[in-house]
Image 1 (cartoon, rainbow, N blue to C red):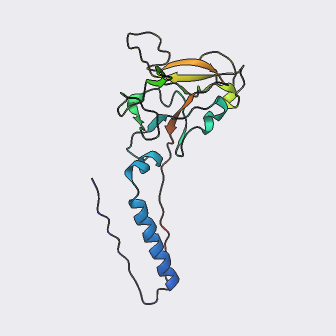
Image 2: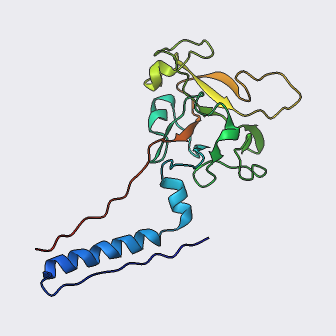
Length: 203
């Protein structure tokens, strides 16, 4: 539902031309911001008070050493512990990968060469920098390595609901060589943006 915004401008005879021009530019910038589409705002604006935190699976594949830079502005490479409970999050279908039956939620599988495969993405573990192949510890030397002998973790949501094979809550996880490609799980920053309009003082 839209809202009405009233802008009232007070003009004094002693106001300078420069001041009036600056005020006009400020009003123009405000109106342009308000006219910005809701979809773009939802995709780019960090978490605000009372809103559900958003997350998504990137639409591009990267090697492990590019995972830290694999998310859009306002989002960051997710730790599994930030997205462990998807029911408390909102999936961003504008930025994220979707499937034919994902609706407003995350995909569990994507088509690859005509066949469905799990929708897996690199995910942070919370462990120390390590190239180990141990599940829950592997993180490609804190996501700095793309070497074939280093290992990282990928996570996906289950496609088989008959039980078993679930490592962390609702998530399925497995190790993957850091030289291989995967998408990236991204989660919204928890900062709040504040917009400040300049104050114009008349002498």
